[in-house]
Image (cartoon, rainbow, N blue to C red; front, side, top):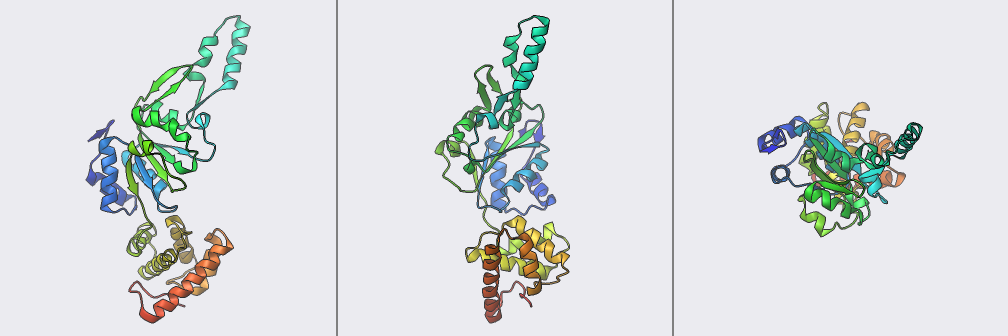
Length: 302
């Protein structure tokens, strides 16, 4: 297929994700490919830390597209997402026009006097871009109305100027962590992809891909410990934190999972003391379980 001047096929996607050490299953890869073929935004949902934003970064690399990111938050509005007037530049223009004793007020409300925010930037670029609308669920529900026109026709309307249509259609990735329900209108305009926490085998593959120096036994021990913690309802370790933990253990010269290194690593990487306490408690249960029946994923050693 052709997306602008970019040719893409499923095998190229597969090879590129592998080159970027992003572990992704075939179903997810096919969904991404379909979003590109259908020229529809990709809505990536899943819990925090599973690699939604990283997926967009990898895809921008795959497509050779510059990534423009809109970080959503409560109170996000049109002036922060689409455009705002460059008042300082307008005042300078008025001052210079006054010195020349000419009237140029009509020019004050034109595209050169606009501060382009991410949504407007994405449709005015000559080169291929990937627009990442990150954590859409953190924005107010009313904000989604601003997106609908652009996602339908890739255009925005500015009262003083009129409708601005995309110079080149951007690739759009929208991430959602489930903070709130998204509108049906937004969902209809997207291809949906759900990313979950990786399995033990996938976690170990991620560690080996991202940290080549990690030993097989260590990567399996870490993967088992994290999977056990998630099964117990402790979701504070996303994929990025797991990778950081593995690096921390390696920097502490651990050739396998050792209790002596847990406190040092977790105090550095955990977000609060409650996380450390909960995780240590969970690991204690995991060790007891391992002592009784073994895991097949490597021992958790003292």
